[in-house]
Length: 258
Image (cartoon, rainbow, N blue to C red; front, side, top):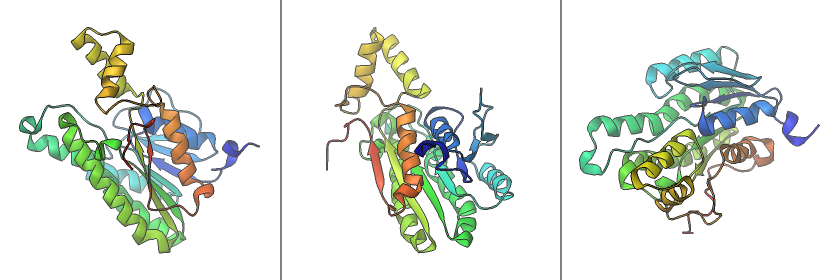
């Protein structure tokens, strides 16, 4: 038996926004470790690995969060909760952004986590253990003008995560955050394709151009969803049982400030 094969055996895990991208990689990692994993998504997943179950709801809404919590709580308290739902849509500068743009960003990138935590934390408190991981973003420290609502919402999520960690520590619940940099997801690949078409670039040059928006990547490549998933799995595992209230950056060196 290797470390990754059974380290989450018997654990019940919930990962939001996990039918694709980073969330899907996180779900697969926990399932590979023996966990029973429930994921959410607004649409059906193309294929789910063994041990992964889909609840098809929009977890960024109050109704979706309530439906998810009711479904998973029927089986008892959740051991690990990963709030990975989120996303950004490029709409130009602040003058182009509408009230709906701001509210959509806050709903998906902040309030979705707040609501689901509020619904599932009581079960963890009653049992006296649990781990919560919030997926934030390096944009909370490197805000781009074309995704300012997203960056602001992720900054708020980081602050909320820190405060929640302090509140829940005495109950035996650990709360941490992971801030990915530029990761090779469907959304990022779509951005690269659009950049290539708009500027007449080949794919390699378009990748470099997108990476330069955030100041470049010293390690020279985009991250992989599985690499973020490995960090999340570590923080949720018993190997990190004395770590709480921390945000870990995984960005290939993009963030240069201390």
